[in-house]
Amino acid sequence: MARLRCLFAVFLVVFVGGLSFADPSASLVCMGAALVTWVGWRRGRGGRRVACVLVMGDLGRSPRMLYHTLSLARHGFSVTAVGYHGAKPHRDVLNNDNIKIVYLTEIKTATKFGPKVFQYGVKIFVQTLQICYVLLKIDAPSYMLLQNPPGLPAIAVVWTICLLRGSKFIIDWHNYGYTIMGLTHGDHHPIVLIAKWYEHFFGKLSDLNLCVTEAMKEDLRVNWSIKAITLYDSPSPIFRESPLELQHVLFKKLADDFAPFRARTESVPSNLEQTAFTELSITGDVTYVHGRPALLLSSTSWTEDEDFSILLKALEEYEGFITSGIKLPSLVCVITGKGPLKKFYNHQIEKINFKYVHICTPWLEAEDYPVLLGSGDLGVCLHKSTSGLDLPMKVVDMFGCHLPVCALYFQCLPELVKHEENGLIFKNSHELAEQLKMNHGMPWMRKSRVKLILELLSMPMNAK
Image (cartoon, rainbow, N blue to C red; front, side):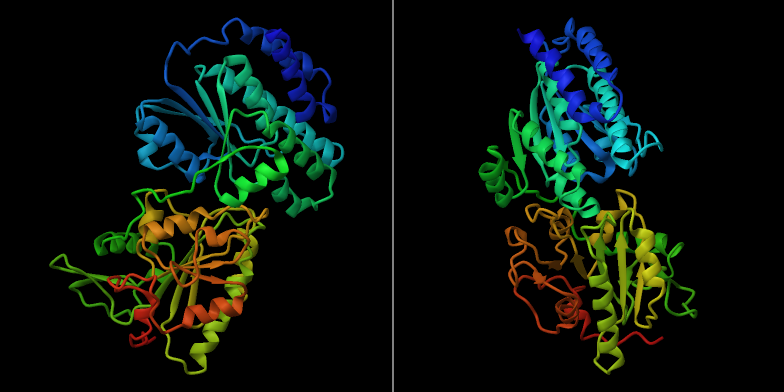
């Protein structure tokens, strides 16, 4: 009976994951895989502490899942982390002997023929075979932990593999995939409706569920009949205030490619090594440059759920404050990350004629990003959840660096950012601009952090 259930599950996975859009012969392929796997489906268990963490995205840009990976490894598990190649994971992951990384081959499109629904179905089908191959090749894990989204086709595939190999299936709900797809296709597009049904149906088949907010836990319980455990993100120890010496090294590195980090004067004394923010004397002492600009930081995946026009409009308003005579520091705004809309926003930035605001959009290595956050004066978060139920990891990292945060409001943000207690919340570009220029102390800011933008506001402006 168990064998028949597993074979039926494989067939169902392929059908739901794209068979009806693509190739009917696929069911035979997957059934064959199930038969081959059945003989050794318990191989590798033997009481071993083995886990698999799967991300259907850039593994290096999936910090929460990498934290799960590290935590499992530090508790004695042998962990296989599976995901797409992209950003380099932090060295703590790469250098851990209990962690093995297996990269998937990214499939941007499997065919250019036929309607988009057909193309998408073929892509899902190919991904299904790819995931099956990888998860059947590794040692049988005791637990498989999957990030959702994206969950199509991974949820059904992982559930099936867990049946075949006797593993416990855990889903970590970061958001709902169908709400993200709705940004591109619209809420009533057939692909979106199929994805919603798929998440709802197969999501209930997991053995354990984690989620990122109490709001999502309640939504899963009420609307999806899924019991989940809320596991709030916490910052890794690598996120902390950066010593001036580390700041100077990073600023010198960034100055090679980005003008806003270079010294603001050509007549730098021969006994100094200077950036726009710091200077190193021949004695080895690093200090701040007098009248340096404020460092404003944000990070993004450059996707449609973050509207950076809000920040650009706020910066234009900030520029207007200065030109009208209000005494404020110049700003260097650094927006880190990679993503599909980066080129679009870079084009928008080029069209704005700033004098006192300088913007750059670098991509940072995993080791450099925490140092930059720990060097900033203010962090801005423009994440607006498609479901209204998840929280921005970037804010957690900023908190770890004791970086003051201004965050765009959405439904469950107060679970993380409490206005005028540990951060500021804004609803539009004007409110953000006002927060950038505010010149009074707030109780949620560390008084010992001399770099805070609120203290910079009292500094003389940097002459240009």
